[in-house]
Every structure is written in structure tokens, then in C-alpha cells.
Length: 325
Ligand code: CP
Image (tube, rainbow, N blue to C red; front, side, top):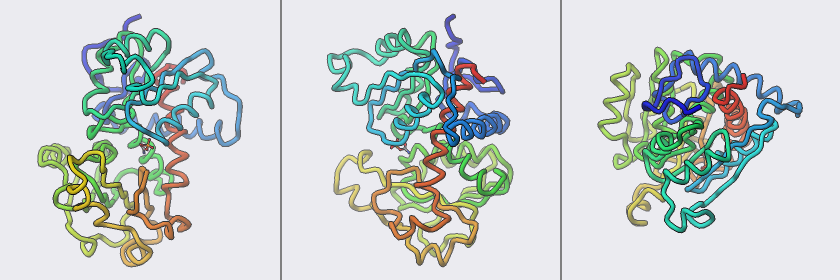
């Protein structure tokens, strides 16, 4: 049966068949559902319980931009649940995209072979275009340029919830490339769904949120405090969310060099401003903005639960959109 393609739809408690393009589709109740199913998925994965939840399902992973975590965790998620994948990395070289095939035709082809398509693309808005192109199967946005990365935001919420047992009344720090950071754009949208959120935004002035995004987010009720240096960091925030300055988004290496690694997490910075319950997150990859000395600090989540939660959350989301839970 063709899916409803009258635009990107709100989830409204029902994930089945829906495209997942933006956090704007979610309410806090929808996030509750994802977190609840994620807990079940974690049990399956941690106990290596053979699952047939996605038995008979095939999911296409088509990544026009490089990825380690998102690609790997989606692939693992499908396999954990007994499904199969069609995996295309770099379709610009390894598919008929190299011969000029359009995005629309590519989506029509792979929806014929699979039950869902997970797409990453360097151009903002492409996941929505893909969702509009596919007639029958849901499309999941695995990152669209500087737009959004909704499944990353869901795993970040799962990581915060695991530690603090709540998603309201949180104080957080977001640092790095706020202008180009799609994980930032989705996570702010997600946190804006909860009361009492305050975020301190630390970035070089060239990499602040656009004024359009800033005004859009604050109009939702979230408190955003832009700061210019580490001395303005709050003490004992609930979380720090550090991000990479994204070389691939700059028009010249010179422009990138001017702003890279202005803010680095060091043991001294943690000691001065983080509290014993402050968790340190990063969507990864990192390129110098968190020193390796921090990795064994129990508050450092990025190479531990944050990465693992990526697989559990993606298992949950796939099971939900394919109507299996
Ligand atoms: N966090 C994230 O999106 O990582 P990858 O680019 O490796 O998928």
C-alpha cells in the first residue's frame, strides 16, 4: 500500500510506516515510547538473545557521506533483530548515481528491494526529498548535511536519561560547531520539548547558531545562553555536549584553521567546571576537542554508553516504523 506522502508527518504515538526526518515530528510522549522500546532492545543486545523481530525485513542503508557509528549501528541494529541489509556506502562511486541516476529514481529502486531506507547525504533537506520520492517505504534521516540528525538526538536523550532519570529541568552545555552541527540542531529541538531546559552555547562567534535557528528554538520556550569563553561555563551542569568543528563544511582550509579547536576539554576544565554528576558526551568523531586523558573518567560517555545506545535506539526505531512492536 502506498504511504501517506502529504508531507512529513507528526508521530502522534504511531510510528508505523512514518518517515523519520526531523525531531520536529516528535512530542515528549513519542520520545517516551522510543526510550521504553530502547530498554527492551538493550536487553536483547546485551544478552545476545536471538531475535526475529525484523525477520523477513530488509533495510537499505545508503550513505552519500562517510560514517562509522550511524552506518555501523544501523547495520548492527537490523542484524540484532534478525533482519538483513543492503549496504551502499559512497553511492557516488559504487552505484548508478555515478552514471547520473537521480535521488528520486534511486529511492524508487531501493524501495522495491527493501522495507525501509536509511539515508545520509551532504545536502540539507535531502532526507525530506527522499521521503517524498519513496512511495511505499519509510525513510530515515541518518544526517542531512548541516540540517538534522534525529537518530543521534534520540540516542543522546537515551544517554542523558540513563544517567539523570529525567529529561526536564536539565542544564547543559553545547560546544563547538553550533552553526553546522546537525546533531546540535536535532538535540536542541528534542530538549526544547521538556520544561526547565537551559543550554549554555559555547562556540567561536563564526560558528554560533544562525539567528533564524536561535529565534526558532527560543520561541519554543527553551533557554539558550550564548557564551564566548570557558570562564562563562556554569558549574555542575547535568551534561556537556562537545562537538567537532566540521572541516568539510568550510569553503577553505584557512577558514577552518581559524576556528578549529578553540575549546578543548582538558582534565583541568572538567575539574573546574564539571560536577561529579556532569556527563560528557560527544557524537564523534572527535578531532582533538576532547583530550584522550579524559576517556577513562567515569563521566565520559562518548566511547561507552553513547555509542552503545546508538545501536539500541536504532533497533527500537526500526522496529517501531516497521510496525513490529
Ligand atoms: N555521530 C555520527 O553521526 O557519527 P558518524 O558520522 O561516524 O556516523
